[in-house]
Amino acid sequence: MQIAIVLYDRFTALDAVGPYETLGRLPDADTVFVAERTGPVRSDTGRLALTADKSLAEVPRPDVVVVPGGPGQGAQMGNEVLLDWLRTADGTSAWTTSVCTGSLLLASAGLLEGRRATSHWLALDGLKEFGAEPTGERVVFDGKYVTAAGVSSGIDMGLTLLGRIAGDEHAQAVQLLTEYDPQPPYDAGSPEKAPAHLVDRFRNGSHVVLS
Image (cartoon, rainbow, N blue to C red; front, side, top):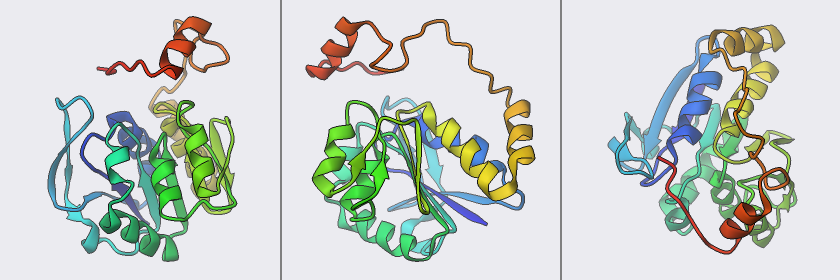
């Protein structure tokens, strides 16, 4: 099974690496990072690069598509090379997935119209523009489309889809071996739980680089 993880300038690293470390543990998985051009692609901090070993044109029919989000997503919304590739790949994929604002790229390609989907909590309303039905759930399945909320939820998406494809026990084994047992020091991981002044700050346009 070929898994294509899309890279573009200023993607968020964990959006791509979370699914890589979980979903990429499928038996006989061929996981490949793809971009418009091969070579290193810088993440949103500019300090980390992942290597696209193949171009989009070289991977036209992956079984699973994974689209990460990140600050660079906005610049890709009108990138017809990427959007056309997403439409073509989706035509034969078994699963088309996204993490964080990657769902806005799927939506921009016309793939989420009339479907339930999620994204980073600050970007949920953007899904409406493309006819998708936004939901604040952490991982959303709608047919073969699987969208995950912000950044860390890509790990949950990868494990959940891994269970659908390879069975619960295999997914549980991957969770155990990666020791994915979240015990965060703060209960502030969603706008419903975080201090109201922090939520308001980011809703009002304040941004930080998570590095």
